[in-house]
Length: 467
Ligand code: ASP
Ligand code: MG
Image (cartoon, rainbow, N blue to C red):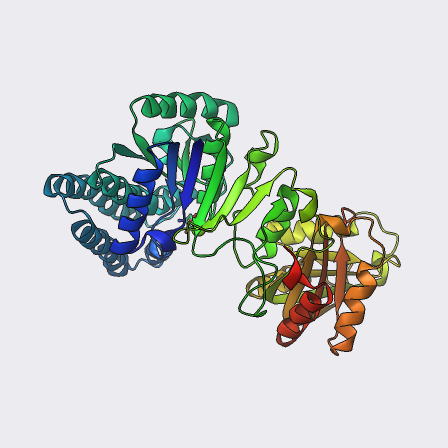
Protein backbone atom coordinates (compact mmCIF):
# COMPACT_ATOMS: atom_id res chain seq x y z
CA UNK A 1 0.00 0.00 0.00
CA UNK A 2 0.97 3.58 -0.48
CA UNK A 3 0.58 5.40 2.83
CA UNK A 4 1.05 8.86 4.27
CA UNK A 5 1.53 8.59 8.03
CA UNK A 6 1.42 11.73 10.12
CA UNK A 7 2.64 11.94 13.71
CA UNK A 8 1.54 14.62 16.13
CA UNK A 9 4.06 16.36 18.36
CA UNK A 10 3.19 14.49 21.55
CA UNK A 11 4.14 11.19 19.88
CA UNK A 12 7.67 12.22 18.98
CA UNK A 13 8.93 14.05 22.04
CA UNK A 14 10.89 11.39 23.95
CA UNK A 15 13.73 9.04 23.04
CA UNK A 16 11.63 5.97 23.76
CA UNK A 17 8.71 7.14 21.63
CA UNK A 18 10.89 8.16 18.68
CA UNK A 19 12.65 4.81 18.75
CA UNK A 20 9.38 2.89 18.94
CA UNK A 21 7.99 4.80 15.98
CA UNK A 22 11.17 4.44 13.92
CA UNK A 23 11.20 0.70 14.55
CA UNK A 24 7.53 0.40 13.60
CA UNK A 25 7.96 2.49 10.46
CA UNK A 26 11.02 0.64 9.27
CA UNK A 27 9.22 -2.68 9.46
CA UNK A 28 6.06 -1.21 7.88
CA UNK A 29 8.10 0.17 4.99
CA UNK A 30 9.25 -3.30 3.96
CA UNK A 31 5.94 -4.03 2.26
CA UNK A 32 4.54 -0.54 1.81
CA UNK A 33 5.56 2.75 0.24
CA UNK A 34 5.37 5.29 3.02
CA UNK A 35 5.74 9.02 3.43
CA UNK A 36 6.06 10.17 7.03
CA UNK A 37 4.81 13.63 8.00
CA UNK A 38 5.78 15.09 11.36
CA UNK A 39 4.67 17.96 13.55
CA UNK A 40 7.14 19.81 15.69
CA UNK A 41 7.94 18.22 19.05
CA UNK A 42 5.30 19.19 21.55
CA UNK A 43 5.76 22.69 22.91
CA UNK A 44 8.27 23.79 20.26
CA UNK A 45 5.83 25.77 18.14
CA UNK A 46 4.53 27.45 21.29
CA UNK A 47 8.10 28.37 22.25
CA UNK A 48 8.75 29.79 18.78
CA UNK A 49 5.60 31.88 19.02
CA UNK A 50 6.76 33.12 22.40
CA UNK A 51 10.07 34.10 20.80
CA UNK A 52 8.14 36.28 18.37
CA UNK A 53 6.24 37.85 21.28
CA UNK A 54 9.52 38.57 23.04
CA UNK A 55 10.91 40.21 19.91
CA UNK A 56 7.82 42.43 19.71
CA UNK A 57 8.40 43.46 23.31
CA UNK A 58 12.08 44.08 22.50
CA UNK A 59 13.08 41.48 25.05
CA UNK A 60 16.09 40.06 23.26
CA UNK A 61 17.41 38.02 26.15
CA UNK A 62 14.09 36.23 26.62
CA UNK A 63 14.03 35.37 22.91
CA UNK A 64 17.57 33.99 23.13
CA UNK A 65 16.76 32.07 26.26
CA UNK A 66 13.83 30.37 24.54
CA UNK A 67 15.97 29.60 21.50
CA UNK A 68 18.56 28.02 23.79
CA UNK A 69 15.84 25.89 25.34
CA UNK A 70 14.77 24.59 21.90
CA UNK A 71 18.37 24.00 20.84
CA UNK A 72 19.33 22.11 23.99
CA UNK A 73 16.24 19.94 23.93
CA UNK A 74 16.85 18.81 20.35
CA UNK A 75 20.58 18.30 20.88
CA UNK A 76 20.00 16.21 23.94
CA UNK A 77 17.35 14.10 22.25
CA UNK A 78 19.63 13.55 19.26
CA UNK A 79 22.40 12.28 21.53
CA UNK A 80 20.11 10.02 23.54
CA UNK A 81 18.09 8.64 20.66
CA UNK A 82 20.60 7.88 17.91
CA UNK A 83 22.87 4.96 18.75
CA UNK A 84 25.20 4.72 15.74
CA UNK A 85 27.89 7.32 16.22
CA UNK A 86 28.33 8.26 12.53
CA UNK A 87 24.59 8.84 12.13
CA UNK A 88 24.45 10.81 15.37
CA UNK A 89 27.40 12.95 14.30
CA UNK A 90 25.83 13.77 10.93
CA UNK A 91 22.53 14.60 12.61
CA UNK A 92 24.18 16.97 15.08
CA UNK A 93 25.95 18.71 12.21
CA UNK A 94 22.69 19.18 10.30
CA UNK A 95 20.90 20.41 13.42
CA UNK A 96 23.74 22.85 14.06
CA UNK A 97 23.16 24.46 10.68
CA UNK A 98 19.49 24.96 11.57
CA UNK A 99 20.41 26.36 14.99
CA UNK A 100 22.79 28.87 13.39
CA UNK A 101 20.09 29.95 10.96
CA UNK A 102 17.50 30.20 13.74
CA UNK A 103 19.76 32.41 15.85
CA UNK A 104 20.62 34.59 12.85
CA UNK A 105 16.94 34.98 12.05
CA UNK A 106 16.17 36.01 15.63
CA UNK A 107 19.06 38.50 15.52
CA UNK A 108 17.70 39.96 12.29
CA UNK A 109 14.18 40.26 13.64
CA UNK A 110 15.45 41.87 16.85
CA UNK A 111 17.49 44.34 14.82
CA UNK A 112 14.48 45.33 12.76
CA UNK A 113 12.33 45.32 15.89
CA UNK A 114 9.38 43.95 13.99
CA UNK A 115 7.63 40.69 13.34
CA UNK A 116 5.99 40.58 9.92
CA UNK A 117 3.65 37.76 8.87
CA UNK A 118 6.42 36.56 6.56
CA UNK A 119 9.19 36.52 9.15
CA UNK A 120 6.78 34.94 11.63
CA UNK A 121 6.10 31.98 9.32
CA UNK A 122 9.80 31.53 8.67
CA UNK A 123 10.42 31.52 12.42
CA UNK A 124 7.64 29.14 13.46
CA UNK A 125 8.49 26.65 10.71
CA UNK A 126 11.68 25.72 12.58
CA UNK A 127 9.95 23.21 14.88
CA UNK A 128 9.23 20.84 12.00
CA UNK A 129 12.64 21.49 10.42
CA UNK A 130 14.22 20.09 13.55
CA UNK A 131 11.84 17.23 14.32
CA UNK A 132 12.07 15.66 10.84
CA UNK A 133 15.84 15.38 11.14
CA UNK A 134 15.54 13.47 14.39
CA UNK A 135 12.92 11.04 13.08
CA UNK A 136 14.68 10.49 9.80
CA UNK A 137 18.01 9.80 11.53
CA UNK A 138 16.28 7.40 13.87
CA UNK A 139 15.02 5.47 10.81
CA UNK A 140 18.62 5.41 9.54
CA UNK A 141 19.65 4.11 12.94
CA UNK A 142 17.29 1.15 12.40
CA UNK A 143 18.90 0.49 9.04
CA UNK A 144 16.26 2.15 6.88
CA UNK A 145 17.15 4.59 4.12
CA UNK A 146 15.41 7.90 4.80
CA UNK A 147 15.82 11.61 4.24
CA UNK A 148 14.23 14.62 5.96
CA UNK A 149 12.44 17.16 3.75
CA UNK A 150 10.72 20.40 4.74
CA UNK A 151 7.33 21.20 3.21
CA UNK A 152 9.13 23.54 0.85
CA UNK A 153 11.67 20.87 -0.13
CA UNK A 154 9.04 18.23 -0.83
CA UNK A 155 7.36 20.68 -3.21
CA UNK A 156 4.34 22.12 -1.36
CA UNK A 157 3.68 25.41 -3.15
CA UNK A 158 1.19 27.82 -1.59
CA UNK A 159 -0.23 31.30 -2.05
CA UNK A 160 1.46 34.12 -0.12
CA UNK A 161 -1.17 34.35 2.59
CA UNK A 162 1.31 34.02 5.46
CA UNK A 163 -0.04 32.37 8.58
CA UNK A 164 -2.98 30.83 6.78
CA UNK A 165 -1.78 29.83 3.36
CA UNK A 166 -3.49 27.55 0.89
CA UNK A 167 -1.73 25.13 -1.41
CA UNK A 168 -1.61 25.63 -5.17
CA UNK A 169 -2.59 22.03 -5.79
CA UNK A 170 -1.63 21.57 -9.42
CA UNK A 171 1.86 23.02 -9.06
CA UNK A 172 2.32 21.11 -5.82
CA UNK A 173 1.16 17.86 -7.41
CA UNK A 174 3.77 18.09 -10.18
CA UNK A 175 6.60 18.80 -7.79
CA UNK A 176 5.63 16.47 -4.94
CA UNK A 177 4.91 13.45 -7.11
CA UNK A 178 8.23 13.79 -8.92
CA UNK A 179 10.24 14.05 -5.72
CA UNK A 180 8.40 11.33 -3.82
CA UNK A 181 8.31 8.84 -6.72
CA UNK A 182 12.05 9.09 -7.16
CA UNK A 183 12.56 8.44 -3.43
CA UNK A 184 10.20 5.45 -3.58
CA UNK A 185 12.31 4.06 -6.43
CA UNK A 186 15.37 4.32 -4.23
CA UNK A 187 13.48 2.64 -1.35
CA UNK A 188 14.05 5.76 0.73
CA UNK A 189 11.45 6.96 3.23
CA UNK A 190 10.80 10.72 3.05
CA UNK A 191 10.18 12.27 6.47
CA UNK A 192 8.40 15.51 5.68
CA UNK A 193 7.86 18.50 7.94
CA UNK A 194 4.19 19.34 8.27
CA UNK A 195 2.64 22.78 8.83
CA UNK A 196 4.64 24.66 6.18
CA UNK A 197 5.28 25.06 2.47
CA UNK A 198 6.61 27.94 0.42
CA UNK A 199 5.07 30.46 -1.93
CA UNK A 200 6.15 30.89 -5.55
CA UNK A 201 9.01 33.14 -4.49
CA UNK A 202 10.33 30.48 -2.13
CA UNK A 203 9.26 32.28 1.05
CA UNK A 204 8.21 29.87 3.79
CA UNK A 205 4.48 29.91 4.52
CA UNK A 206 2.43 28.05 7.14
CA UNK A 207 -1.11 26.64 7.19
CA UNK A 208 -2.03 27.85 10.69
CA UNK A 209 -1.89 25.97 13.99
CA UNK A 210 -2.31 22.24 13.70
CA UNK A 211 -1.49 22.47 10.00
CA UNK A 212 0.52 19.25 9.80
CA UNK A 213 -2.71 17.28 9.36
CA UNK A 214 -3.37 19.39 6.27
CA UNK A 215 0.17 18.78 4.96
CA UNK A 216 -0.45 15.03 5.20
CA UNK A 217 -3.63 15.14 3.12
CA UNK A 218 -2.12 17.53 0.56
CA UNK A 219 0.78 15.13 0.04
CA UNK A 220 -1.52 12.10 0.09
CA UNK A 221 -3.69 13.59 -2.62
CA UNK A 222 -0.65 14.53 -4.74
CA UNK A 223 0.86 11.04 -4.69
CA UNK A 224 -2.50 9.21 -4.90
CA UNK A 225 -2.00 7.48 -1.55
CA UNK A 226 -4.20 4.51 -0.72
CA UNK A 227 -4.68 5.71 2.85
CA UNK A 228 -3.69 8.52 5.16
CA UNK A 229 -3.11 7.81 8.83
CA UNK A 230 -3.21 10.53 11.46
CA UNK A 231 -1.34 9.13 14.45
CA UNK A 232 -1.63 10.79 17.85
CA UNK A 233 -2.21 10.12 21.53
CA UNK A 234 -5.89 9.21 21.12
CA UNK A 235 -7.33 5.95 19.75
CA UNK A 236 -9.57 7.72 17.26
CA UNK A 237 -12.78 9.73 17.21
CA UNK A 238 -15.06 8.97 20.15
CA UNK A 239 -18.81 9.15 20.82
CA UNK A 240 -18.01 11.75 23.53
CA UNK A 241 -15.07 13.03 25.51
CA UNK A 242 -14.10 9.98 27.63
CA UNK A 243 -13.17 12.34 30.46
CA UNK A 244 -16.85 13.25 30.71
CA UNK A 245 -18.54 10.00 29.69
CA UNK A 246 -16.99 6.86 31.18
CA UNK A 247 -18.51 4.48 28.63
CA UNK A 248 -17.73 6.61 25.56
CA UNK A 249 -16.94 4.39 22.56
CA UNK A 250 -14.51 4.60 19.71
CA UNK A 251 -16.25 5.34 16.42
CA UNK A 252 -15.21 2.72 13.87
CA UNK A 253 -16.43 4.58 10.81
CA UNK A 254 -17.52 8.11 9.97
CA UNK A 255 -17.95 10.05 6.73
CA UNK A 256 -15.81 13.01 5.67
CA UNK A 257 -18.57 15.47 6.41
CA UNK A 258 -19.14 14.03 9.86
CA UNK A 259 -15.42 14.11 10.56
CA UNK A 260 -15.24 17.77 9.54
CA UNK A 261 -17.94 18.59 12.09
CA UNK A 262 -16.25 16.47 14.75
CA UNK A 263 -12.88 18.05 14.07
CA UNK A 264 -14.32 21.48 14.82
CA UNK A 265 -16.03 20.48 18.03
CA UNK A 266 -14.26 17.39 19.24
CA UNK A 267 -11.61 16.39 21.71
CA UNK A 268 -9.32 15.40 18.86
CA UNK A 269 -8.46 18.67 17.18
CA UNK A 270 -7.87 18.34 13.46
CA UNK A 271 -6.98 21.26 11.20
CA UNK A 272 -10.28 22.34 9.59
CA UNK A 273 -9.06 22.14 6.00
CA UNK A 274 -7.57 18.67 6.41
CA UNK A 275 -10.33 16.83 4.59
CA UNK A 276 -10.48 19.14 1.55
CA UNK A 277 -7.77 17.40 -0.50
CA UNK A 278 -9.39 14.00 0.14
CA UNK A 279 -12.91 14.78 -1.01
CA UNK A 280 -12.44 14.57 -4.78
CA UNK A 281 -10.01 11.65 -4.71
CA UNK A 282 -11.98 9.83 -2.00
CA UNK A 283 -8.83 8.73 -0.19
CA UNK A 284 -9.72 7.04 3.11
CA UNK A 285 -8.18 8.35 6.32
CA UNK A 286 -7.58 6.55 9.58
CA UNK A 287 -7.33 8.36 12.87
CA UNK A 288 -5.19 6.11 15.04
CA UNK A 289 -3.07 5.86 18.12
CA UNK A 290 0.70 6.13 17.60
CA UNK A 291 1.46 3.31 20.00
CA UNK A 292 -1.67 1.19 20.18
CA UNK A 293 -1.17 0.11 16.56
CA UNK A 294 -3.17 -3.09 16.89
CA UNK A 295 -6.19 -0.83 17.13
CA UNK A 296 -7.45 0.19 13.69
CA UNK A 297 -8.78 3.52 14.96
CA UNK A 298 -11.51 5.47 13.18
CA UNK A 299 -11.94 5.08 9.44
CA UNK A 300 -13.01 8.29 7.70
CA UNK A 301 -14.28 7.75 4.18
CA UNK A 302 -16.71 9.02 1.55
CA UNK A 303 -19.03 6.05 2.00
CA UNK A 304 -19.17 4.48 5.46
CA UNK A 305 -20.87 1.09 5.54
CA UNK A 306 -24.63 0.90 6.21
CA UNK A 307 -24.08 -0.38 9.73
CA UNK A 308 -22.25 2.83 10.57
CA UNK A 309 -25.13 5.11 9.65
CA UNK A 310 -26.59 5.75 13.11
CA UNK A 311 -28.84 8.73 13.52
CA UNK A 312 -26.52 10.37 16.00
CA UNK A 313 -22.82 9.50 16.12
CA UNK A 314 -21.38 11.67 18.79
CA UNK A 315 -22.00 14.45 21.24
CA UNK A 316 -19.16 16.90 21.55
CA UNK A 317 -18.62 20.02 23.54
CA UNK A 318 -16.53 23.18 23.48
CA UNK A 319 -16.31 25.05 26.76
CA UNK A 320 -15.26 28.60 27.54
CA UNK A 321 -17.11 30.67 25.01
CA UNK A 322 -18.98 33.93 25.20
CA UNK A 323 -22.44 34.66 23.88
CA UNK A 324 -23.39 38.09 22.55
CA UNK A 325 -27.01 38.93 22.00
CA UNK A 326 -27.19 41.90 19.63
CA UNK A 327 -30.49 43.78 19.73
CA UNK A 328 -32.01 46.76 18.02
CA UNK A 329 -35.35 47.78 16.53
CA UNK A 330 -33.71 49.26 13.46
CA UNK A 331 -32.32 45.85 12.61
CA UNK A 332 -35.81 44.72 11.58
CA UNK A 333 -36.35 44.59 7.82
CA UNK A 334 -33.13 46.43 7.21
CA UNK A 335 -31.02 44.61 4.65
CA UNK A 336 -27.31 44.73 5.35
CA UNK A 337 -27.56 44.66 9.14
CA UNK A 338 -26.04 41.22 9.45
CA UNK A 339 -23.39 42.14 6.89
CA UNK A 340 -22.36 45.18 8.95
CA UNK A 341 -22.18 43.17 12.15
CA UNK A 342 -20.06 40.41 10.65
CA UNK A 343 -17.88 42.83 8.73
CA UNK A 344 -17.11 44.64 11.96
CA UNK A 345 -16.22 41.39 13.69
CA UNK A 346 -14.14 40.20 10.74
CA UNK A 347 -12.15 43.43 10.70
CA UNK A 348 -11.15 42.75 14.29
CA UNK A 349 -10.11 39.21 13.41
CA UNK A 350 -12.88 37.58 15.46
CA UNK A 351 -13.87 34.05 14.58
CA UNK A 352 -17.63 33.58 15.02
CA UNK A 353 -18.48 30.03 16.09
CA UNK A 354 -22.28 30.10 16.09
CA UNK A 355 -24.92 32.44 14.68
CA UNK A 356 -28.66 32.62 15.03
CA UNK A 357 -31.29 35.18 14.14
CA UNK A 358 -34.93 34.97 15.07
CA UNK A 359 -37.47 35.55 12.29
CA UNK A 360 -38.64 38.85 13.84
CA UNK A 361 -35.11 40.05 13.00
CA UNK A 362 -34.88 42.06 16.19
CA UNK A 363 -31.91 40.16 17.52
CA UNK A 364 -28.88 38.29 16.29
CA UNK A 365 -27.02 36.03 18.69
CA UNK A 366 -23.45 34.97 18.18
CA UNK A 367 -20.95 32.84 20.06
CA UNK A 368 -17.23 33.58 20.12
CA UNK A 369 -14.39 32.26 22.25
CA UNK A 370 -14.18 33.79 25.73
CA UNK A 371 -10.76 35.12 24.77
CA UNK A 372 -12.29 37.03 21.82
CA UNK A 373 -15.26 38.34 23.75
CA UNK A 374 -13.71 41.58 24.93
CA UNK A 375 -12.48 42.49 21.45
CA UNK A 376 -15.78 41.49 19.83
CA UNK A 377 -17.91 43.52 22.23
CA UNK A 378 -15.60 46.48 21.98
CA UNK A 379 -15.59 46.59 18.20
CA UNK A 380 -19.38 46.23 17.99
CA UNK A 381 -19.88 49.03 20.50
CA UNK A 382 -17.37 51.31 18.80
CA UNK A 383 -18.73 50.82 15.30
CA UNK A 384 -22.43 50.12 15.59
CA UNK A 385 -23.90 51.05 18.98
CA UNK A 386 -26.48 53.76 18.64
CA UNK A 387 -26.61 53.16 14.90
CA UNK A 388 -28.15 49.81 14.02
CA UNK A 389 -27.58 48.28 17.43
CA UNK A 390 -29.42 49.39 20.53
CA UNK A 391 -28.12 46.98 23.07
CA UNK A 392 -25.62 44.19 23.60
CA UNK A 393 -26.15 41.48 26.15
CA UNK A 394 -23.08 39.47 26.97
CA UNK A 395 -22.85 36.10 28.73
CA UNK A 396 -19.45 34.65 29.51
CA UNK A 397 -18.45 31.04 30.18
CA UNK A 398 -20.88 29.15 28.03
CA UNK A 399 -20.37 25.80 26.33
CA UNK A 400 -21.46 24.64 22.91
CA UNK A 401 -22.90 21.13 22.89
CA UNK A 402 -23.13 19.60 19.44
CA UNK A 403 -24.83 16.45 18.29
CA UNK A 404 -23.31 15.14 15.08
CA UNK A 405 -24.41 12.46 12.64
CA UNK A 406 -25.52 12.49 9.02
CA UNK A 407 -28.36 10.08 9.83
CA UNK A 408 -30.15 12.95 11.61
CA UNK A 409 -31.07 14.35 8.21
CA UNK A 410 -34.78 13.94 7.71
CA UNK A 411 -35.20 11.88 10.87
CA UNK A 412 -38.25 13.12 12.71
CA UNK A 413 -38.09 13.69 16.44
CA UNK A 414 -34.37 14.12 17.07
CA UNK A 415 -34.74 17.68 18.37
CA UNK A 416 -37.60 16.75 20.66
CA UNK A 417 -35.60 13.86 22.15
CA UNK A 418 -32.63 16.18 22.66
CA UNK A 419 -34.48 18.91 24.46
CA UNK A 420 -36.64 16.56 26.49
CA UNK A 421 -33.50 14.85 27.76
CA UNK A 422 -31.90 18.19 28.54
CA UNK A 423 -34.97 19.55 30.27
CA UNK A 424 -35.25 16.43 32.44
CA UNK A 425 -31.81 17.30 33.75
CA UNK A 426 -32.85 20.87 34.49
CA UNK A 427 -30.28 22.37 32.15
CA UNK A 428 -31.14 25.70 30.62
CA UNK A 429 -30.55 26.15 26.88
CA UNK A 430 -29.75 29.68 25.73
CA UNK A 431 -29.32 29.28 21.98
CA UNK A 432 -29.95 26.61 19.36
CA UNK A 433 -28.70 26.18 15.81
CA UNK A 434 -29.12 23.56 13.19
CA UNK A 435 -27.76 23.99 9.70
CA UNK A 436 -30.07 22.96 6.89
CA UNK A 437 -27.72 20.03 6.28
CA UNK A 438 -29.13 18.63 9.54
CA UNK A 439 -25.72 17.13 10.18
CA UNK A 440 -25.18 19.02 13.36
CA UNK A 441 -27.58 20.16 16.03
CA UNK A 442 -25.88 22.54 18.42
CA UNK A 443 -26.99 24.44 21.47
CA UNK A 444 -25.49 26.58 24.20
CA UNK A 445 -25.52 25.94 27.95
CA UNK A 446 -23.61 27.27 30.95
CA UNK A 447 -20.06 25.90 31.24
CA UNK A 448 -21.02 24.26 34.51
CA UNK A 449 -23.85 22.32 32.83
CA UNK A 450 -21.58 20.79 30.19
CA UNK A 451 -21.04 17.37 31.75
CA UNK A 452 -24.70 16.91 32.63
CA UNK A 453 -25.83 17.81 29.12
CA UNK A 454 -23.25 15.61 27.39
CA UNK A 455 -24.04 12.60 29.59
CA UNK A 456 -27.79 13.06 29.17
CA UNK A 457 -27.52 12.98 25.39
CA UNK A 458 -25.02 10.13 25.31
CA UNK A 459 -27.54 8.11 27.32
CA UNK A 460 -30.59 9.25 25.36
CA UNK A 461 -29.10 8.08 22.06
CA UNK A 462 -27.45 5.00 23.66
CA UNK A 463 -24.12 5.93 22.08
CA UNK A 464 -22.35 3.36 24.26
CA UNK A 465 -23.90 0.69 22.03
CA UNK A 466 -22.94 2.32 18.77
CA UNK A 467 -20.70 -0.26 17.11
N1 ASP B 1 3.57 22.46 14.92
C1 ASP B 1 2.39 23.10 14.48
C2 ASP B 1 1.52 23.50 15.66
O1 ASP B 1 1.85 23.23 16.79
C3 ASP B 1 1.65 22.30 13.48
C4 ASP B 1 1.06 21.01 13.98
O2 ASP B 1 1.34 20.57 15.08
O3 ASP B 1 0.29 20.41 13.25
O4 ASP B 1 0.50 24.11 15.47
MG1 MG C 1 -0.93 19.09 16.05
